[in-house]
Image (tube, rainbow, N blue to C red):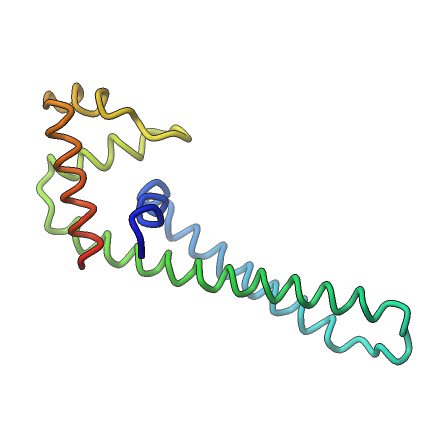
Amino acid sequence: MDRKTLEECLKIYPDINKEIKQTEEEIERLKNVIQEYQIIDCNKFPEVEHVIEGVVDAANSALQYHTERLGQLREACHKIRMVFAELPLGERKIIALRFWNNSYFPTKWKDVASALKYDRCTVERKYKKIVDRILAS
């Protein structure tokens, strides 16, 4: 897992179980779509054979994407939980203030630092160490 993927997972971490469930449901839906289209008899409908093949190809691509994403979500969830269990409260607050602020965009580092009464560089350095620990776990 790379840093960018991990940060995306950190953003959704409070709701990561919901995201995992939705991804699992989407995988099942795609499998059903593929199965439904593969049983269509193209001999009866030769004019739609290329359409059926296109739908099946698109569904297979989406299935592959969601399967990979599910693996990444599960891996990130496991790694984050393991590292968070060992982190001091102050370091957990850095992640919480940065990503879990009910906003689409991460909180700016200067705002995280002022909330924790630290220097911005200190907060960024601690954050980098946290992410490195998660990636190494």
